[in-house]
Amino acid sequence: MNESEFIFKKKIQCDLVSEWTSPSNIALIKYWGKQDLQIPKNPSISLTLSNCRTQTRLTVSPIKKYKKKISFDLFFDGNLKPEFNKKVEQFFFRISKYVPFVFDNHFKIETKNFFPHSSGIASSASAFSSMALTIVSLERKFNDDMNDEQFYKKSSFLSRLGSGSASRSIFGKIALWGESEFFSKSSNLYSIPLVEKINPIFNDLNNTVLIVDDQVKEKSSSYGHDLMNSNPFSFQRYEQAKNNIGRIKKVFKNGDLDEFIQIVESEALTLHGLMMSSNPYYLLLKPNSVEIIRRVWDYRREYKYPVCFSLDAGSNIHLLYPSRYKKVIKEFITNELLNFCKDKKYIDDYMGSGPEKIK
Ligand code: PMV
Image (cartoon, rainbow, N blue to C red; front, side, top):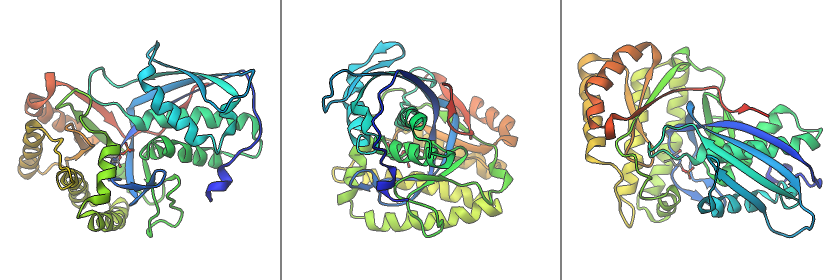
């Protein structure tokens, strides 16, 4: 599907409510580096989470006088949040080419996050994907030609314009975003769900997020993506990521957990290595992040349980393990790892089935 096929020109003015919840995701193969309007420099793959999600309610009402301006009020947890207006307005402008009816209506946007308070996790993936879903739901009420597949594709396409990783949250379990020689239906414009040939061992992955630092991260992802344009290792990195897509595809089929761990941890450390080799260089890991990583390695060496870590662009540690090991890994977390977490905070999450429509 090409970009122009996402344009829906019909004029819509209505009084309607549309509401969705959408989850966050954790990338196994990381997206780090982009060009133009959120076109990734390499394909990425993520696990869609379940508990960490955003709920967005969009109340639409017609505006009387047309102006080339987006009219909206944004509420977060029941309060007006003008500090988020700039990002939301930018998102609406970007998507307006494909859903021009955004100029003809006023939007009351009410969002709430189901992340534990002060966890330092503010997910643009869940926020923008839930917002995109409410908008495309609105379009669908007036677009009889849109089937389910097109609905999710367009939601992923619009989510991408808010935040690249948001495009993956539209699909449950495992999603791929970005063109890859290993997946014929892959695209830079939207994500696709990876449903075929997934070994059952990956059906019930747990993700425990160990909160090392509960403050909002020091550097935005956009800042990091931009620095990839001058990073001396960027070309090699994009090649490595492309290649890792092929490696993990095999792993998804054969269930080789050792290889899975190798790929996931290497991707996490590479992401942070890229930050450290950027100009200006920076470092988001904290001493306690490194301590936890070392302890995960020691534990795995000693007990041979298939637990590994991943990292986002922050200092918190995402532990990944099949749920059949939940009991022992929970003991390890409680007895050892929580000592290195801020106020012993953690979030238990697992691979989930994706967004849900509420209204
Ligand atoms: O979607 P963005 O622009 O917030 O970038 C996400 C970057 C990482 O979370 C570090 C990696 C990824 O693929 O999700």
